[in-house]
Length: 261
Image 1 (tube, rainbow, N blue to C red):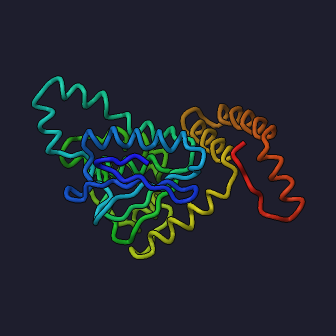
Image 2: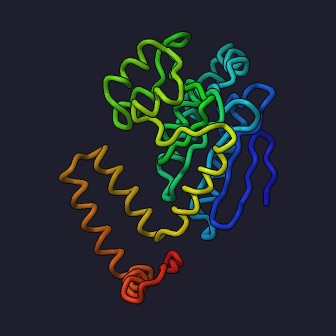
Image 3: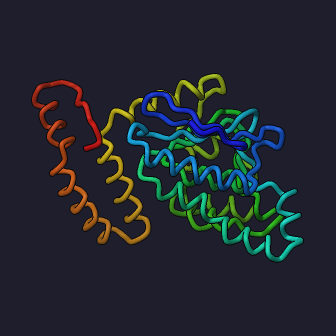
């Protein structure tokens, strides 16, 4: 298994865990991390044994966003500044288009680009000690991904408030706003993540892919276009071996064994 400089990639059964691993700077995202995240998610996408990905941070933080020291150096050079804006969407696009479930395990502070990583996840589980906020308004004006995704993934007025104020919220406040699914004590974060991951790995892989496809279409194209996609996906699933296995398992009153075929 490949070793990375800024992240850790580990597999346990059907779960791949990607850990942001620059604890000395609270896991701030530099360009190396951008590229390594894209590579790690590509690897998990192609690995048939991987059914769920967990994204988390090492040390006391999840991620505070971009490495501002590197950003300052890059913006002093017009060519490097241009490259930054060209490369910036890549990591987030890889996660939002990822066909398998992604769990965000928020172990600590998550602001700016760190919060935008959370928005790319399908299920978010946060420690009670996590502090979460957009924060772009405080220093750089706007978080492009936050303003694009947050109004569709959490309570609309709360998304507007978070973007305009730049305030940092508790995990419980984020849970109430619909941004976080579960909030647990710090020492129970890993337990809850494993519980949800185990539940997801037992589902039909093709079904999970179809669910994500249809829900994304519902958000981006509206209910009518999503319904067309849903019927198409449903028909395709009906031809799969896993669909037949699910029906057999139901009839035989046992847990199905899905293979992704």
